[in-house]
Image 1 (cartoon, one colour):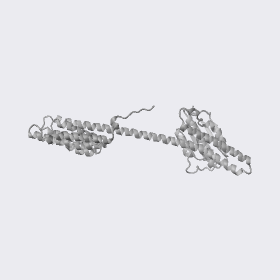
Image 2 (cartoon, helix red, strand yellow):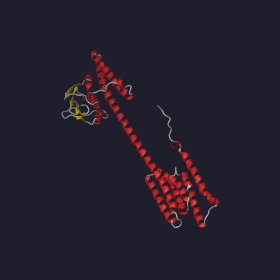
Image 3 (cartoon, one colour):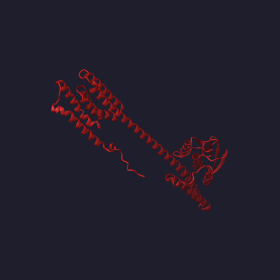
Amino acid sequence: MTTDARPPLFARLRPGYWIAFDVAAAVVVAAVWSAPLVTGRGDGPPDVRFHAGVGLLGATALAVPLAVRRWRPLWAFALALPAFGLSLATSVVPVVPLASVPMAAVAYSLAAQRPRRVAYAALGAVVVLVLLATSVCSGHWAWPGVTVLLPGAVVVIGWSSGVMVAQRRAYAEALRRDFDNRVHRAVTGERLQIARELHDVVAHSMSVITIQADMGRLVLDRKPAVAGAALGVIETTGREALAELRRMLGVLREDDRDRGALAPVPGLAGLDDLVTRTAAAGIAVEVGIRGTPRALAAGVDLSAYRIVQEALTNVVKHAGVPGCRLTIEYEDDAVLLVISDRGRGGPPEPGGHGLVGMRERALLCGGEFDAGPAPGGGFAVTARLPDRDGR
């Protein structure tokens, strides 16, 4: 179900609208505070009228930084601070309390948009200015708390609001980066998993198909029956590879309605077919089982099967021997796999992904992996996979 929920009005306004609002507010401030200066009206002694006029001039000057506070907050604060100080030191009630509102807006913009050190430096400048103005006004006015401390408190409130907005933005940005990193890690993990599955399926099947095709070509004229058997192995291996590829594609495209139609995930129970295909490629696999066979956890079972599959593929491609040995030992809380041969003893060709994939599978299960030349000659692959959940 879709909804037509709209963001709040303030969130829908473009930046240009806010700048226009600031300019309009600046015009109003300039008009309100400059009117007494232009008309020359005022009551009281000349010194009081002089101080009031200078204060009005400072309040009027706050219109300029108010208009540019969103796109030049630092410049706006630098212009507003002396104007605000002038109004603090010379004006009377009610000029200064109302004039503190534009200054509070400028302090808000600076604290919300600039780094923390700049924001706190601005707060320090405001505090110093208020203290200086308090000392100046204490000798002239009976109520410096109203004309100086109250406006200063209004500016500090505006600054505090800007700091809270900056902290909220920083927190939201940190959450977004964390979410992006989690998504990236998840996508990378899925890509590696798909790459491992494709490599294991394709590499083993193509090795068998290539060897059988090469043998069939060599004996086609002299031994048609042998060539026909090789073609049969190619057909069977190709069909099995296609079935696994379709299963993988089905997993990628699946939804809850299609889960029941997917083929089962391969495991050690399917080793007989794997050994048969390897034998068809010319490698006889001697299988040894130690301990009591049992059902393994799904992830461990799949990883064990893929490690054996890739190790046998490497024997077919690189060992140059007619046979190898596979030992599966069921321990109390793990399964141990050893695939060894008496072949050349060197590692697979550089640039391959087989050993890397096997190691990744073992480590993902929390297990151990080792591969290299065997002490008595040949090559050995050893993997120990924990299986605490499969008992």
